Amino acid sequence: MAARLPAELIRFGLVAVLGLGADLAVAWGLAVLAGLSLPLAATCGFATGAALNYVLHHSWTFRAAGPRAPERRRVASHAARLLRYGLGLGLTLLARVATVALASRFLFAAEGQELPALLAGTAVSFIVNYLTSKHFVFQTRGTPPPCGPLPDIR
Image 1 (cartoon, rainbow, N blue to C red):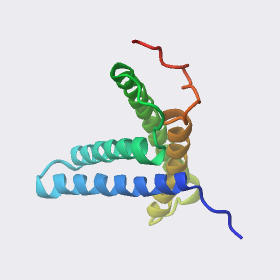
Image 2 (image 1 turned 45 degrees about the horizontal axis):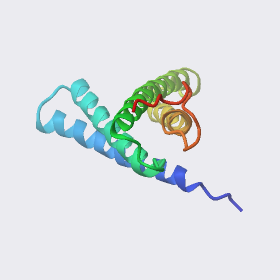
Image 3 (image 1 turned 135 degrees about the vertical axis):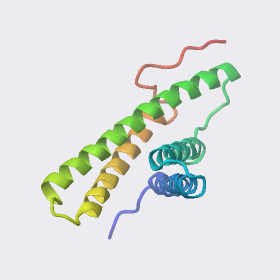
Image 4 (image 1 turned 90 degrees about the horizontal axis):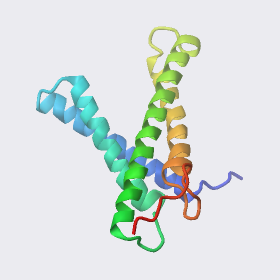
């Protein structure tokens, strides 16, 4: 019998699909309806999807819980988390591009095999994104950030 997927991983997948939908909808709309160049439209779409993912992961996937900290501390915490999120996105993008490059060179080198290479990159980047989000960006309560706890600035 197959093991059940953790609810957190299911929520992560749902948020990823929503983020991808927002990404593609914004990119397509800006390129086709507003006439923006495809690279600029894709960049805007990526930023929209990433922003939506951050909000949903923070509030639903990894459920930031616990007592509410003073306002200044919450702002500092969000700033630190956003920085970690940006670093995680960079690592995720690097994993995707590297996987696509390697897969298209060694596994799917024939013409017409671009989609399997892209899907391999998407699968690897999904795993990297989940692991960095869970263990680096949105640590569970009681686990200090990799750089130590945030200072109390009250």
